[in-house]
Length: 404
Image (tube, rainbow, N blue to C red; front, side, top):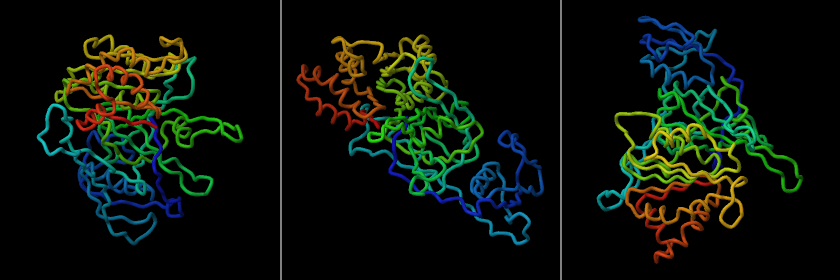
């Protein structure tokens, strides 16, 4: 899922960006982390690594990751060494706000967990590599939506389910300034799609609309760049950011997820952690209910995986779709997500009364008012003011919204 950011700046390529430097490194040894590198690793002595200027910081982090130590840096074909410095980013950690009272079952158990934020900033992004880019929309669907996976094994980028990363598209805008970063919800678990802690994945729709004055088709800068990104290409990544959409650690929780389109991204991460991955420290035993709104059946992203999980875990996962251009609501109009919510209003309301229930929304702006449309009338029948109920949910850290 994409959401616009406040913007960022980056430095234009300069002459120094084309220069090469030689690192003299000691202390490296062969391991699974460096089997794929294109230079030899010795058990003792120095290793000399040629590095482009723009990848110097990244290579420093890679060398440190492999246990090496840089003892000399000098420009290629130069005799004067540079002073060896380290510029490795340190993860910032932020604790979620705590209430004055002791934590109860109402609070997210992850409230005490340390959350990685802004490990990589816009002025010094991590340069990842695209290792996968494939379409998610089946024949007959609308728009272009791609699943992208980036290799992040050479740095310190790590994240949690529900967070986002920033992508800085190359080039400049119409004013000659570097493009601003865009934020995208992460679609993979903390372990990545390869389960090796070395990748991060996104679900991206190419933005396309008609200019209101010229009627010309306008394509989103970053989404178009990503949707057509070739495997093997570099990509500038910032982050991670976000604390609002984190998945609680409680294995018995009820997780209600409302998504439209690429708003499925964080919920894919949730569901993959719950059902596709098996970890000793996390065994989901609660209920996950995804209500997913799309225009056509062909636009049900990750459809096969979702249906398989629903079949394999019928007691723990429910999948409900609202297909606007193929289904009708009770009044004969298009079926939207709020209509599905209204159909299940009593059941959803009863679930929301339980302290272990969390409600998540991700997708198009207006979702929150749509959910109010679906649930507020039922709440009123119970003598409850909807706005007051939402406030209490937010106070208990059980109401999570990310719309764009």
